Image (cartoon, rainbow, N blue to C red):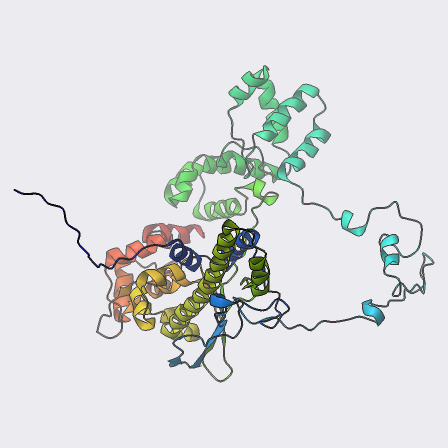
Length: 522
């Protein structure tokens, strides 16, 4: 077999993930808040990028130049009617990314922009003072009109900080425990309390670490278990509830027996609990109600986690004449410009080839970023507009009218790939007249209709199951088979195992447990 060398030309097509394409894909799946953080980093690293303060393309530095003066993305799309949705937003007219510039109007108070206010003469004898002509007078008086209180703190220094759980416990320890050894033990126990208020360590290990008798540690713990909030320093749930009941003088033998068998209460086993506690059904229901009124996590009363509000990326509202308006959230959408004037200035001042290459690379990067932001905004609007089109009945009539929807439906309607739609709907929220929803919420699987016709959304079926359970009476608990029969009468073809799966996903107990709950009055 002979071997030989030869030159051969071959033409092929291949998709190459360039850094610019990777950046565009990354921007597409960022929320507006995450995008703002990314833009801040780019503004620090690229001298040719500048933040758009709303001056428009005719500002002093000019708009983007060269490849960078692509039109900015339109920030909203309107639906002509509920059956006529735009394929995409109209093109914008500025070089900034994001929505239209805010109004430039302002408001002034009094003469010279300073509000005039004349105090009435009062007990302090400080009347008829006019600091409008001298704003410095407000600062020199440190928040007090007249007087000589310059040494006093200003109003901003008098605000009280929210006290933490540890600070609250330490202040009680200082007032309650006088012995230095017991106070040292108490300080160590405070450090072992978790955010829910429970003691997380074994007392034997505490005694060994501090080199003291365990009886003294237990005695100090009993003292500290009387601290506020009630239930603090408990080692388990039963002890936490017992501390609170003892505070209310309700820890009798029957209640203690109930606390010793909390698992039976969780299982709603009323017969076993009545036998163990020696009470009838009415007393057991009252005892269960009292336990429900207690706080299983007392520490969270002071160190409660602050709920972080969701910032919507898309705003939706109804048009007066019918249809919907979908727009990007102006408050979180970053706006940047490519400074053409600065680029021209530093290009002429470049001294060598390396500097010219750096300036060119930064200019191309800035232009690509502006184009990517423009494309991102248009893509988000197109996807959101089509979702609103597909789920129009949901926005008009409620969750029971939510349609089954998959990514392919949106992708085919707007002529994009499923992966693009998936990235757009990731971590994006839309504020609607019915609340704030993640875009992923509107994509649900389909459940076939029992007698033909349109399929039903899985989310709508889950809502129907929850509504049936919520409407149950003590003598009318529905089994999974009965729920299947009701849904099939409503035209929903669903299996019993599917009902059980949806019920468990909604954290709805079985029919046996629900019947026990009704008996206990839970």
